[in-house]
Length: 161
Image 1 (spheres, rainbow, N blue to C red):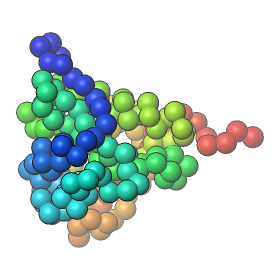
Image 2: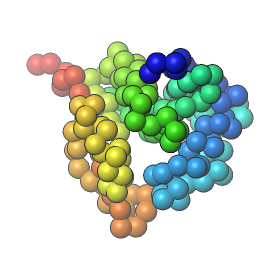
Image 3: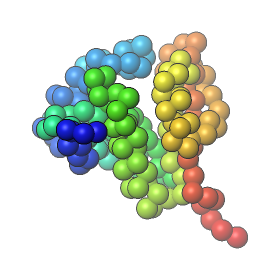
Image 4: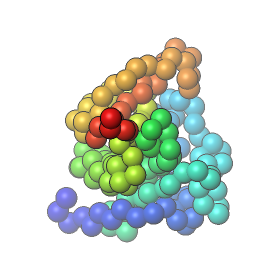
């Protein structure tokens, strides 16, 4: 990433508009029917909807990615979304942001879960490269005729005998 200055930091209310533009203007969110209004409800003017932790990836002082993490999900945490602006994809930024999320999640739990749409082949390959395994499909969760695939990365069982 020569010439770039990637920084990962906590989401701030001033990130709202660039994050909403990123999400509303990219897939799989457009295909799933999520738009500006949906993201505006999640990313409020006073912060993120309660129960989530937000992280922003900045490159050259501009928002280049976002991640939302929900603590305490199925004996672990749940990565609710991970998005990188299209112009910054395939440069290692997604892996960098995900690694930071994993550091946070695995400091308090043994499992990190995510979902990916069955039609999102690039995201599926990305998560497999990062060590995630498909647990199974959740048919018709977001749109008819499509499934969300539950993924898991683990450092071991939640409890030892």
